[in-house]
Structures are given as C-alpha cells and as structure tokens.
Amino acid sequence: MTDETESPDEGRIKLKLQGNGYIEPEIQEEDYILGDGMLQGEVLQPDGQWLDYLPDPELQKRRGVETSNCVGFNTLENVEILLKRKYGGVHNYSERALGIMAGTYPPGNDPHKVAETIRKQGLVPEYELPFTENILTVDEYYNPKPLPESLIQRGKEWLFWYDFKHEYVFDKGASLDEKHRSIIEALKYSPLGVSVFAWAQDANGVYQKLGRDNHWTCLVGYKLGAYWLVRDSYEPHLKTLEWNYDFGIAKRYAITKHGSTPKKNYWWSRVYRRLGGLFTK
Image 1 (cartoon, rainbow, N blue to C red):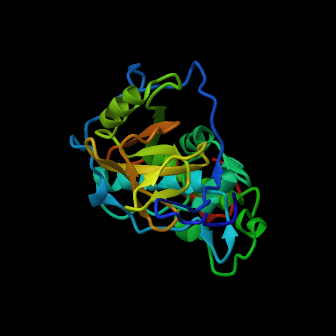
Image 2 (image 1 turned 60 degrees about the vertical axis):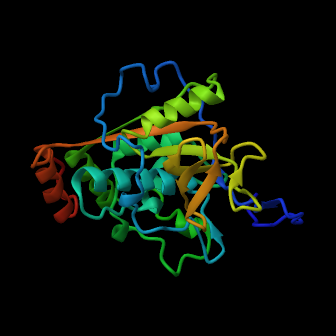
C-alpha cells in the first residue's frame, strides 16, 4: 500500500490507499494499560480537546519518498502537543532521528517500540537532522545509521530534562463501547496515538474503516456521538472520523519536567559533546 490510488467513486466511498509504516504491537503482561494504576497523570484537558496546541503540520512522504515513519511522525505529534500544553512554547523534534534510533525501515515500526525508544534514548531537535530537500531515497532518509555520538548525546540531554512514559488505553479484548469510554477518559490526560485504516472517505468527507489497521496517527478531539478528530502526517492533516470507528490500538503519553534544572549529568553531557567526545562522563 505504498502507492496512492483511488477506487472508482460511486458517489459513496472514496479510497486512497495511503497508510504505510504501522506494525501492530503485541501487548505484553508487563505493559501499562489505562486503569491499572501504573501510570499516574494529571487531567490537562477535561473536555478532551487538543486543537489549540497543534504544532505545524509535517508530511511523512515528500518528493515521492515514502519514509514508512508514520509511527515516528505521529508519536512526536503527541509529544509536541503535550509539551506545548504543559510548558508552553514551540517544540519540534526530528522524526528522522527517532526513526533511526528506533530501527524504523519499510514496512515500518511498532508504536510501543518507538515510545520505548523515546523513554530510553530521548529526542533530537529537528534542526539537527531534518527531512531536507536533497533526500530522494528511503536509504538517504535513514542515514546516518547508527546516529553519530553527538546526536546520541543530544537525545540523552532531552532525558536529563524530561521523563517520558506511555500506556495502552485499552486491552485488545475490549468491545467498541469499552474502547470509546476509555479513549474519552484518556483524552483528558494527553492526545492519543491510534491505529487506523488509511484512508476511506465517504461522500460527506468523513473517514471510515474498511480494512485492517495500516497507519498510526494522532487523536486530538471528538464530538460526542458524532465524530473523532485526528491530526495526521498525510494531507489533509486534520481528518474527521466516523463516531463508530473501531481503533485497533491506542496509547496515551505522559511527560514530566525535572523542575527548573535538569539532572546533574546534563552539564557533563554538554561538556562531552562540545569537546567532541575526548573523554566520557
């Protein structure tokens, strides 16, 4: 499903086979699931609406290069929205660097693995490794591999400032009603990463699920009983999904800042990076 194609339009459903990059995770017994009390959090948006905190949109496919990095793009969408809501300002991190750190490559990656990569290795600013105009192949996008030590240290610096955690919103055995109740509750704490079928649109422009999940996107709001809203890495960036949409997997995220100063090893890391790795901390 790497090529974008449209089915014959009979005035009812339009298909654009666009999803690329989602690999379904296997929920393990030790994984956090909403309601088990393992991941604490604060209610940030009691109405579950996150539209006021959206970053600038970014495309996972540019100049014909399909990165298969939807999990990286849309997990970072969640992170950047959550940081803006909690701490203000504009936050922009490199999807390309995250993809390399997480081992992403076509056909894609697992959203749990990508989230664990952030938790353990941190994030790199976008300007350090952007999706530049001269990148014309997937191999060029996922290069340098592995990341140089200077960028690895940049990721560690992020961890000196922030703690990042994540949990599943529901178990795989949940009914549609159970999923929707859990999603509405989870949206009070963060936007959500969700798996979807990309993309099938009805005559009213509302997206439906007509096949297995093949894409990871960012759920940012809803109108009760009417629709869900996602912010996506394919155009149009804001999409309306039908209310009875059956999301296969959903994750919520939590970020806590280490007060006004980072962990003490942050400063040693900066010295290390500035001196080019002549010594280790």
